[in-house]
Length: 640
Image (cartoon, rainbow, N blue to C red; front, top):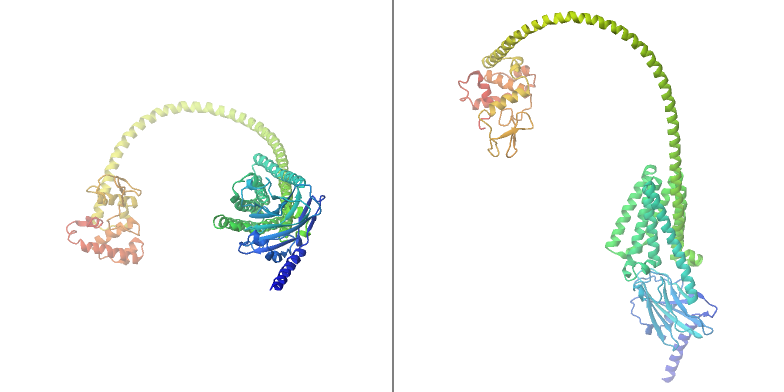
């Protein structure tokens, strides 16, 4: 039994020793200021449930479960899992400089490190993007951990990484001196970058205030969005703007990316006059803007975790790039050449950034891969400024050409004015001579007229006397005309009531619609007006002549309402005449005869005659003994 246990112990010791030998140590001496762990120098273990403790991970049972890293830098491929990483370091001598381990990716949510101290016990430290900024060891945008033991020997360092975003686990050893130098240089570079953004923004703000062109305003909003995105992903915004609120880190870069895409496309439309030069691309840009807004709202309201799908920004970037190429190639618009060059740099930076994220960083220098998008934005801003300046130069040149044309036209106008003035002066001189001659002739005529006026004065006295006599005669004639007109009306009324008149004679009494409406009004309201709605007796004129509107409830009653002519479709004076003929003939006149007299279709005459005949039958008793005037009794509705 003892032999079996001994063999098992030896076998387990062999496995542990083999695992330890399998991971080659990184050698560090006093000349090492900085070292980046990469490739197989880092071994890792995935913990799908996140339940493993450090004691379990560091135990002999898990030593051989760590697997060598296959990528240039490790990644958390399964974002729901916790990952443990281990590096082996050998100090060939007592290290005299204070040093740190630094992690670069600022979106890493939680980082737990376990370093051996001078007594061989492991010390735990913690950092990450989900902790407030003041909990970090140093007030720096990256994550730093102070190494407790720098004595000669070999040591294992353990790192526990947990993040809901895909991160590159870049582990760097640095001395404090190197860290300070690197940090100062980096922040100085950031200061220059953001200073350029501020300068570009301020310059274009002044240009906007000077010329009031909206493209400057959109460009300002675009580069400010670029600045917001850069400070968000660099961790500087977390450091200076919201250090106590890590939750903002999940929203800031997503909001900034939405603003970048939106203002970039709007600026493209404004700068390149896409709506006029390429209407199809203008509609395409509008559709992309709408879809991008919908995706932003879904991420903001429903699931902020979707902000991490940054690859969708390739779509608006490509649309803007292709639009610039099309307008440059097809429309020969000069400012588009700088626009295309600027977008080419941004497109190249985007591609390099994607390559770096996908793990091909070994083929790209570190600074270029990490800051490629920032360089792309920087070059794009410079060339977009050139594009705006080129457009201003073109507009200035057009303005100068227009001014030259205006000056040339003003000179032509001045020459034409001088020519016209000379012609007018010649004409005026000629006309003046003619006027003088005419004045002499008129003077002679005035003398003649004065003589004739003397004769006319004498004749006017005679005419005045004759005018007085004529006035007296006119007064007498006017009285006679009044009497004659009254007699004619009486005779016409008598003829209307006594004999059957033709339409021309009948029209003397009822010549037009107004006369007919007046007759109906007097007939309908002979006993006074009463509102049909509220029984009010006061009224005013309605919208249609001879209608009456109640002054209390504003109900307007038509003069045709409750008459036989309601809903009438033929001229009212012809309808009057038709009723007159039907009554005069006692309903015996044919529709054919009515059509011939009225000039209306026979079917219409038949329908209207049937209506009148029906009323005559209903009021047969009422019409007895009323004479020829009875046709007017048919007009009003009996019930009314």
